[in-house]
Image (cartoon, rainbow, N blue to C red; front, side, top):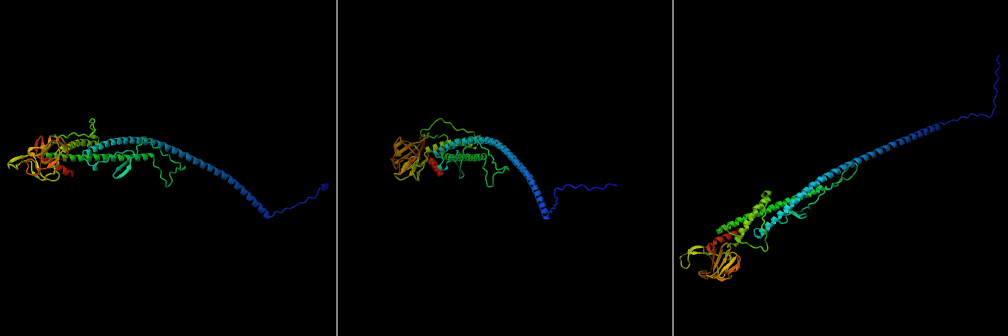
Length: 433
């Protein structure tokens, strides 16, 4: 028999043990879950913000780095442009200096030519070969800053630069993207182009000046050719040999010096060729003009007076026989003035037999003129007279049938027909008009 189980001894009781039951409401649980979800969302958002901010900073740094590289590339490109512009400027400077030297040489040549044109103009004007209305302009030589007149337009010649140094244009930094001039702005013209435009303008002005000088020479040459033809034709009327006649030397008052003729090579251009042809023609015309001025080509009385007797054989008014008449007779009223027909020296002023009161004037080249039958003598022997000087008055002294002027021309004391000289003078006067 198993022993009967004895009950466990009772533990000592220290106090009363109470069991409590807590009841969680449903709303409280939902609120807790909502708070937990909100906390989780805030934590995720904060983490995303932190992570995204780091990525934004990295992108900003990368963008700034890219922009810096772009600026550096742009600066390198601009430096290369500046080097290229500087090299081009040096080349442009060499070209400009070469053009300036060429234009300066042309300007010196134009000034030399202008002095020749002015000298020829003065010579022609002083010798009465060209009127003032036909004189070429003397301000054709281009001087720095002087006005240029061509075809009615006035401009000013630019000043030749001594050392042109066209500075290169430095491009302005308008941004890393290389933006140029803003809309509406006009970029300044590079100095090299401005200098080139000024030199081109000066070159055109010099060309016009050269053409004007050549035109002036050609006009003078044409005038001289026409004058030479007219003078030779007039001398042909007198029957004198123009090549054997010599013009008297004239004094211009305090001028002189060695004769140094201007010699130019005709192959140098039209100007030199025209000048070489013009100079001997001018010399010939001046000599012919000097001879013409010394010939008795003027009429011995003003106005138109009828011839009552011509030069040559005629019936003598007193003997009614054939006789030689050594001059021409002009009908005129007593007291009408009689003038010298050319400059010269009075070699006789007296009563001379059949001539009556007579004046004889000695001219150049063996020529002389006589004025007879005068009622009064107005000059004295040895007196120098000019063409147009009154030498006496019409009368009827000596072997005369009535008041008239007996007029003679003589060559080496041999009488020649005065009408030859009068016709030559009339032709010159008609051509002059």
